[in-house]
Image (tube, rainbow, N blue to C red; front, side, top):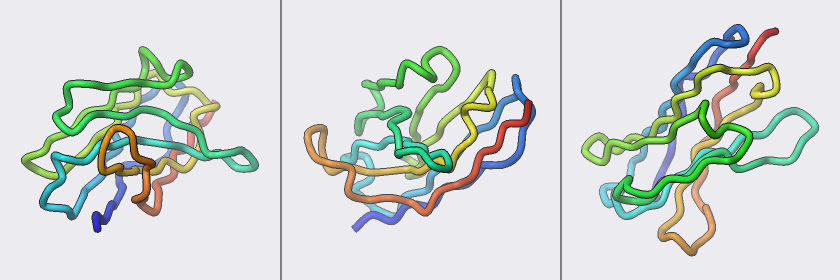
Amino acid sequence: QVQLVESGGGLVQAGGSLRLSCAASERTFSTYHMAWFRQAPGKQREFVARISGSGSITSHADSVKGRFTISRDNAKNMVYLQMNSLKPEDTATYYCAAATNSSSNFNYWGQGTQVTVSS
């Protein structure tokens, strides 16, 4: 069972950047599809970005496309979310998630890291 730990959240002004990191414990990490989700207070959790096991295929939500980039380093068991041009509406708790393959649900979740963007 893969364990996920996020880091890198914080307070940033609008227009600024943050890089979130997610460390995974699983030795077969490269076989997992990984994703970032976020949840703002009073709102449902929403998809942000996902990446295939090899890292060759990525997708991003329309709301972050062109500003956020998901990547991974399988040698380090890490997934990243580079967030640029941050907006106040990006304020949320960001969660790292893992799925065993492209068609399975994301069943493994981290505890989240808070991102706050001030205007």
